[in-house]
Image 1 (cartoon, rainbow, N blue to C red):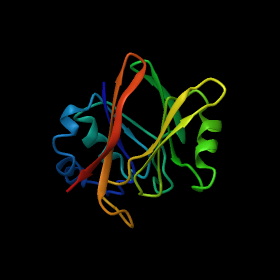
Image 2 (cartoon, rainbow, N blue to C red; image 1 turned 180 degrees about the vertical axis):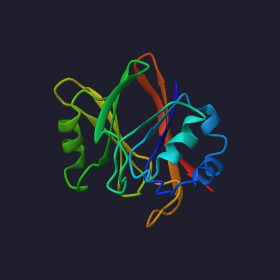
Image 3 (tube, helix red, strand yellow; image 1 turned 135 degrees about the vertical axis):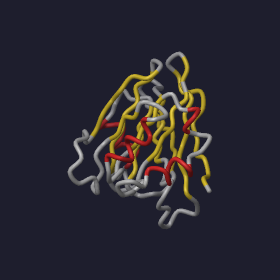
Image 4 (tube, rainbow, N blue to C red; image 1 turned 60 degrees about the vertical axis):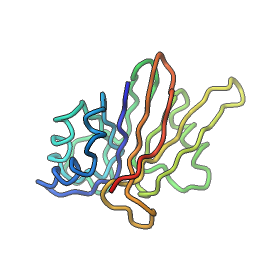
Amino acid sequence: MHVLLLADTHLREGEGARLVDRLSGHLELADVIIHAGDVTDVSILAALEEFAPVRAVLGNNDRGMVLPERFVVELEGCEVAAVHDSGSSTGRSARLRRWFPQADVVVFGHSHMPYHEVDIRTSDGHVQHQINPGSAMQRRSAPQHTAAVMQLRDGFVTDIGHILLP
């Protein structure tokens, strides 16, 4: 299963085509799209849904949108969680593990900075990928516009990483 990970697109109504253009080639491969908040308009989700089912969480700039603040979903046997704001970078890994103890992957946004760490629980060796895809549209202090892709198979993350966007 090919999963496209997004966050912090910050687009207004009718600007979905800009995002689709920027993600050209990646959307067509997606089986599922996860958006970690700050979508800012439901029309953006509709544009993404033309390519694959979308699961999204509420970001701090998503006014009037009806989305969960967090979710956990099973994809290809993996537990995948999402939240917009993971809090301070200090203690992030432990906090995400506490919020989503069984998740194999936690997707978050808010900072616009691409991030990927692997937390291995010492008690049982459970691996948790913690990933911020960055922002495809508003890089802010990040060096480039980014998204992330994840491959899942038979209950395992087989590949996960960031993609640089034009």
